[in-house]
Structure formats: C-alpha cells, structure tokens
Image (cartoon, rainbow, N blue to C red; front, side):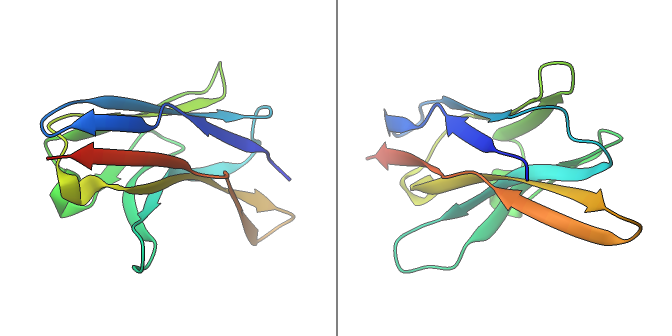
Length: 120
C-alpha cells in the first residue's frame, strides 16, 4: 500500500490561490495515474485533475485555466496549483494514486484529504 499525505489546504478569499501537495511514502512502481478528487458536503466525490505516468494531464471543465497539476517523480510528490478560487471550489480535496500490482490488477490508494474553503 502507498501512503499519501496531503497538505496545503486552508481558508482563502474569492480570487485567491492555494497550492496543494501530496507526498507519497515512496516511489510508486508501475504508476498509471495520480490526481485529485474533491468532495463538498452532501455531494459526490468528483475528479478535479489527473496526470498520467507519461505526464499527460486532464481537468474537469470548471478547473481548466485555473488549476494546474504537476508531479515530481524524484521527490514522489504531486501538486495542485489552484488560482482564481471560487466559493464553489470549497471541498475536501483528496489525492489518489493508481498503480498496477501483479499482471493486471490496478490498485487505487487515497490520502486522508485536506480542506479547502473559499470565502466570498
């Protein structure tokens, strides 16, 4: 199991920025994807951004142009830079990692989450 620890959440005003980090307990062999989900109270957990092992990125529509995901494989860290934040970005943000175990079993591990609150 890979341990993921998020940091960087907090309270920010409308239009502000936050930088979330996710530190993995070590290198992740056969990594397929890492990324961020978020979950607001009473709502489902939604994908925010992902990055593949070859560096390809994907974002939910509401995050495009405002958020940027990156990964430092040497430091085993994942980062989500969030700019122009809006109250609707308020949620708990979770880091995840998808990696292969064995020949074809894709495992997903999660971090514990970090709260992001955007005030208007």
